[in-house]
Length: 218
Length: 410
Image 1 (cartoon, rainbow over the protein chains, first blue to last red):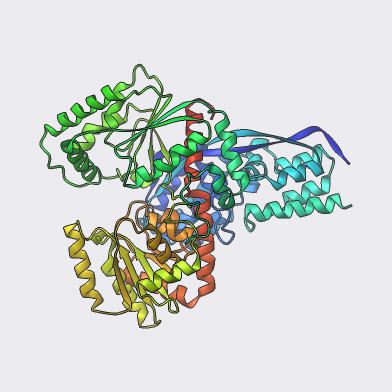
Image 2 (image 1 turned 90 degrees about the horizontal axis):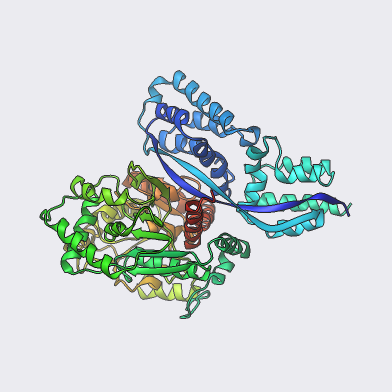
């Protein structure tokens, strides 16, 4: 049994939602709002949105895309916004820049549509994260699997999705530990490739568990 | 009668485990462990009746079970006080304020009486709605943490009443709103706490199919044919006439029934007029069931919702729309207007269908009746949406997180 010098320590996260004083009533205002809003707001509408709506695995990517489609009838722009994969971003600043660029380019190409009033306004909200150590730790893959069994969606999201921003790496807490703690490079890579857009958090966890079982049966 | 009924004993957090999973409940305990023994005071204006009391009746015991020293106080006053606060309530919703200027002095006098009676010394004080807002005067030198929980839509308040209340509100550390649409630009932090339902209340707990069937039979509703249901007061803003028109349009394609279940028509002259209008438009159609139910009909409402094929909420204006939440929780496909807090719950084509007109409502109903698998999928996803975001336990988590935030933990 491989054991890691540094155990994996599980934590969970709870979020408080703040209402900012910023809202958008057309695409032009959405782009302006994206320039002015806080990083916590970008996080809320992208990373955290994926957690709140993780059970939607078809066509729901982030709040901006959903609003553009549902309230502005902007299917083309919504598709472009949907295609931005948060796993590609190591900072909220970079993600914000790309969101803004995509919207600005669309507005320049469709100046009339940019000012078309939306059906419902978009309200910029913000996430405030509170982390709580669960007091569980794993030194081996067997112990890790046992903890994974009883992990909440919030904790799984924290380690598997939101971790990129903390690590500033194109990986997640689990993969990083498999790689550096246990020396399991292949498991680390397979884990990192689990599609968080087409799987619910529950399914993603199931897939990870099956990868671990395969590894343990070798 | 019910398969998951906890009976008459007091509910405990563990009762939610089968619905939420042991982990979610354990996480609430983890969060609360940092707040053990901290004092919390909830203050509102009634202990029975109304949505706020309903929420506090569950929230307070759960917070207590989690180890917080929580107390619930109710402000008191004469009829004149409650007439004034009712007028405040209507004015904050955007209506006119017709009370005389001295009404503000009466409000303040009752506030002083309550201040003399109540001990306002908790570490966290949560003031619910405008009635107890003046109690902030008890706060000395920024002591404790004070939060104003606003359960009403403040987006277009009457300036006279808001002008009077705002100085009290802004002395709090923060305000909580049920939807960003209902908030105002304030110099204090504003938090979003969605309204919630209790999955173990009579209105929402799981029911045996026999009870559902018996309830339908009691109201002469045919369980073999599709049932479209809107549960709402008989109020113009809920557009029951529009619902009948949408049903009549659907009926040309599919043999179905309509249930309009509501109350409030007996003691509300406007409700009576709306009910009469609905009956006139229904024109004696035996497949339209207009049920004017008494306030103690939670189980019947539950059964009607569970026995329905599609839940409708065709409001012209809406608060958050907890009847939508209830329908989604019961895994029902929902067709609802894109107003108020409804789009937060009904994510179009994901957790239900949104509509903007009678014609749109009729079309979405026809689409779902023709595509039962899609309808079923929407219902399942709607249930998940409520489970993740709109249950009483989510509200507990939000309060715990807020208290920890006020203590500087995030």
